[in-house]
Amino acid sequence: MPDEVECPRCGESVPDLPFCIRCAARLRDERVAGPGRAGGPGRSGFAAAPGEGSSRIAVISTLFPQLPASDLDTFRIAFAAGLLAMLALVVAGAFPVALVGAAVLVPALVLLYVYSVDVYEDTPIRVIAATMGWGALAGAASGFVTNAISDAGSVTGTQRPLEVLLFGVVVPLIGLALMVAGPLVLLRDRHFNDVLDGATFGVASAAAFVAAQILVGSASLFAAGIRPIGEPVAWIARIFALGVALPVVAAGAVGSVVGAIWLRYRSPVRDRDALGIVGNPLVAAVIAGVLLVATALAAQLPGPILDVAVQLVLAAISLVWLRRTLHLGLLQEALEIEIGPAIECANCARMTPYHTFCGHCGIALRALPKRPGSRPE
Image (cartoon, rainbow, N blue to C red; front, side, top):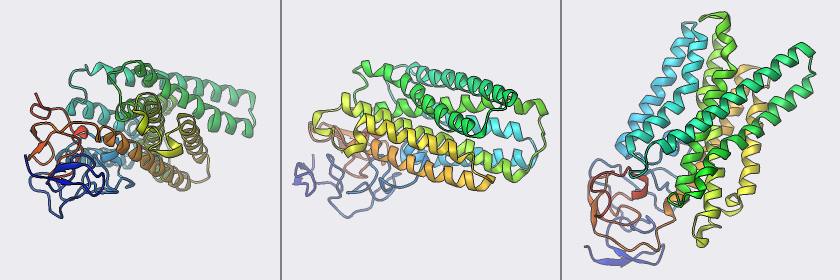
């Protein structure tokens, strides 16, 4: 065990390593050795990704916070390759196929993420699968109802203001309630006792909901064949909306709301004000509702570029909100945990005392997959 020093940030006695194992403050100005990347959370960094700020707009490290640095690039490549494949299909004129691919891209990555990192080593994958199953069923039901309302409106000549109210306000708010309802069932299980758990369930539910809603809502497109008439520019914009903006807004908003619920009802009392006013579940729900409604209303703006641009801005806001929530979840347990025996960090492959953060690369050990040797016996 290295000699101990007093951390200037948290004031606790910690091993004399480059980073504080309790709060991740930088204790030495050193570069990280091994496969991990240089840098670390420091005062404003993101606990799950050394070298990235906690307010950075980064899709992969935010939606998949339990990936070691070496795996982040793999998921980034998979996400980019998926989008490029969808764009290639648009260029080829296979618009509906591209739409299906865009709808399932993020949920597919979520499933791959859960399987590859083994987020809960002693909990079957069926917990996340059931959460996503609920989201998919609720999303499909929402898509069917939305189609029915749209078809009825076309027959009866529903006026534009009523249509905007239904599809721009009512449907998104009902969707928010449905996406949150599934994860709430798991609140009773005290095995899932921190903000990171709640946010993960929220992201999984939201990703599946949006995918199912899009697929059911767009089923009519296949009636015109695999190559329906349409402008490629409009379809490219739609692919970015469906493959990036909509799932990210939903995942960020719902993950943050469910994280706030876990913060209020499962976290230690000392942490419940750590997120400020957005840590209040009611306030978080209102903000999430505003984001989802604004995203739905943006889809009705004129021109395919303007609406997607607005939706991408809303996605960035949701992403940063979720990132701050996850950052707190990774910091929660730091101050009251006893320093344990040395373990191998899955990020930098160096031995570090078992606690909250790696003393060499600064990553949150809770943010890494549970592998043999990553927890003390």
